Length: 418
Image (tube, rainbow, N blue to C red; front, side, top):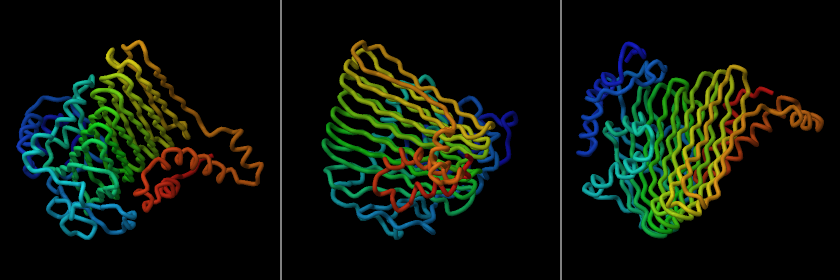
């Protein structure tokens, strides 16, 4: 596909895309595809190389397991087979352990889009390209009911087996009361491709979910990662995202505490180099009292890379007693790089404790000088400072991510500039 921003509008692009994608796996996705393909919508950033050169006639629904590290101890690793279905790490049908029960087709149909639509009600711009593209894609959809604690961590591996891949999996999770689960998206892309992982999760009272995204991309690849989370009382949701190497990425974690009295923790690291654009738009809304939020997004921009962060925290009148903290920390290493950050608090409740802030800085000369005075070269001193900046988020990843050596991978991809 070759196109530019002026020669092809979003409607015709989506229509052409729909012609090449397989049929959706659910009736709801089919309806959504028809609505989007025939709608008149603003044009996306089609001039970006990862979308401009995407060959719609050569889309694949398969991932490769070649060159991957072994799964972490006790983890259940899944990947996509040639037919677009989930298989275990050895390519066999999944043997689900007790506590992880696949949803029936009717249950998937009923749950699909429920969390996403509830979260979208509170966005100024409810239309999101990543969500729309996942909606019109064929899937696959994995629906699980989660019961109990002590379950194996669930690792979903997306590594395109060929160029021009289009991978759009969606996961639906229903966590019963007091259940606990860790979910890791392991993404690695070395060529032109589009990856659209989407999670919808509903957490019952006292349930706990830690979602992690470890995404290493390519300069001609695009990532659109969406999470839509509905939290019940006393539930705990944590998300840790580490993204680097993509030409274009957009993360959209969206959380609604439907009754308040829940805990949410969001940690993100985006490393934008070359001419990449890494974009994060988050939403957290409290619809009841005594909710908690701890959010810190970190970004490093070098060369001509650009990082964008927009975090919306909504505290309406029923959300008395809310305790929310939001921070954006950024390192700017080049005069040609760019960082845009906009933490947002929308507070109507009057009995709350809410803070937000943003910092943009370079590597500090006094810190470099201190390390050099200990016999460390300036190059290594800069590397150590970047390591510390990365590690503040990387250490929040669950243990199942350890075999990927994320900190070493980040440093290996870094061209350190003192």
